[in-house]
Amino acid sequence: MDFLSLFLMDFVKQLQSPTLGFLIGGMVIAALGSELVIPEAICQIIVFMLLTKIGLTGGIAIRNSNLTEMILPAAFAVAVGILVVFIARYTLAKLPNVKTVDAIATGGLFGAVSGSTMAAALTLLEEQKMPYEAWAAALYPFMDIPALVTAIVVANIYLNHKKKRSAAGESLSKQEYPSPAGEYTSTAGAAFSTAGASLPAGTSFSTTGDYPSPAGTSPSPAGDYPSSRQEYLRKQQSANNRVKIWPIVQESLQGPALSAMLLGIALGLFTQPESVYKSFYDPLFRGLLSILMLVMGMEAWSRLGELRKVAQWYVVYSVVAPLVHGFIAFGLGMIAHYATGFSMGGVVILAVIAASSSDISGPPTLRAGIPSANPSAYIGASTAIGTPIAIGLAIPLFLGLAQAIGGI
Image (cartoon, rainbow, N blue to C red; front, side, top):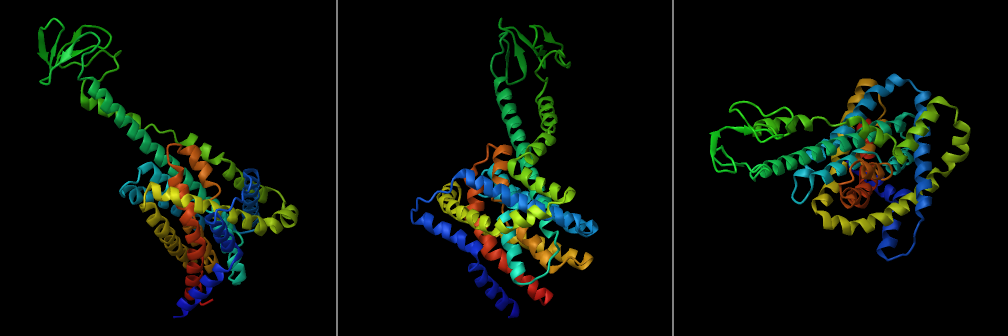
């Protein structure tokens, strides 16, 4: 009963918070047909400053903390980021009318982290006076980057397999037709010349000449065609395994959003940015966050129609997935709590960033890394439903759960 009352109180309080208020306000004015437009250039500046601030916060906290305390929570953050992608790959992708590559991209976006959702959680933790580690915000990249990289790698492996299978089917179908030299192959496996003379079954031909190879021998090494279907499939399978992962990882890390965040972490770690942090980035953070939430609310409403056109299962996934991911991370956080003394506030942060779906760094990274995926599917699922669920439901849920378990 205490847990239920705490949860309801926190939920109502969260509904009254400026963060969710601006999000809902953006959805309302968009529904009413408002022509309010925030220029794209301003949004890009806001995103850069928010991610840089989050990176600076994490970098400064890491520099001033005992790094051994971060090992287990950081490992759990990495594990959750990767796990979320595979959950989508083998659940959402199996549902009707859902394309596999779109499901993988959606999993990557839900495995990545929303800076605005994490900022909202940190704000509420401070209002509730629940202590948490100063470096907990630095768990952001440990979950965000592995999720995005895993999604891009898995999607490219899938597309590569699909492309090879398609090429294999086309090549095998072409072998049923006459070759340029005029030879034909019967269904019984006997080869015929253009003169009509039947040749022994199993006789194969060189691709560089008109002379057949003896039965039971392989074609000329200079040829490109395999001697059998089995050999062809073995070659295709071998080619499928040659997926270049590092260029995909490099492209993800060089994305503008991740670059800003990693730059902030590096500056926080290796320089002394406290003065500019306190005088510039920190005071502007909440105001910039409110503008971003307004823009997100407007975009969320515009994406609802696109999401319905893609598949209704994305709506179900967007409602259920944030809570499932959050509970997985909450459980792992409790293991860290009992094993290393990880604070309950830190457990809440880990659960919230797992429940969140990226609204800043994820979309541009996935657009570049998986260009064949439909942005209306993964961005619509994240922005229209995933983010409101994470902010309005997941944050008070996990905060209330932590208070009930920890007796705070």
